[in-house]
Length: 238
Image 1 (cartoon, rainbow, N blue to C red):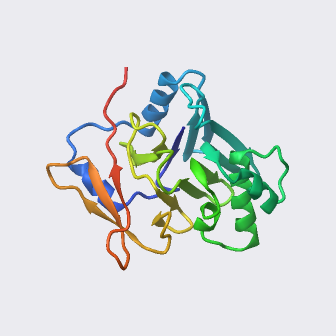
Image 2 (cartoon, rainbow, N blue to C red):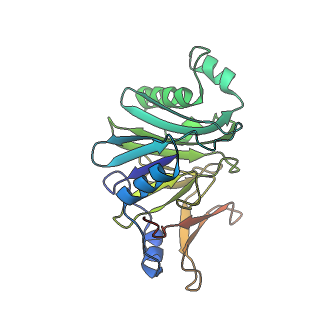
Image 3 (cartoon, one colour):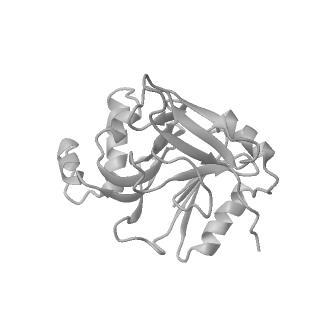
């Protein structure tokens, strides 16, 4: 799955932008990245939302333990990969029918919390158990919400294109990034799944490691979790 977002939706951390300026390898544009995904994945489904958002997914080479799905409802669009161990209990919690799958559950949970009160985004993922990653975009509020499970059973990668778009994907050959964390424009910065109140700081990689930055979760015991952020897309356009 792939989600590409312009800077009007999300601004990448300054540390990743600075790291990208040091890399000698060429990057490709957001349009070229979307084309690469379509060309390399049979039966890929793509969706353009206005001028600032592009979503795509495919069932090609899909793992039976990590199925991919897409749904849209009330201007909320969501890509989901993986499975929830507590899907049944969450259906009951939100009063949803037994036909509700994981991607619809995430949309309904997000929508319920959004409409009831301005709850932080981590309230949605706090009740999810299993291996999963999802990319959710609320077009009515221009809110982006991206999450992965806390131990990275379903990896999620992110990076920056040549024209400054931020891209998220489950395929490291397209881009690479931080796992076990989530980004929400409602919060305005990266947060750790297990410690959502703790700030994440990014340290640019040493000059000899020009490919990215290392993210650390601040806390009373020091580093609680780490992740690597990458923002280089090799030029591979035919």
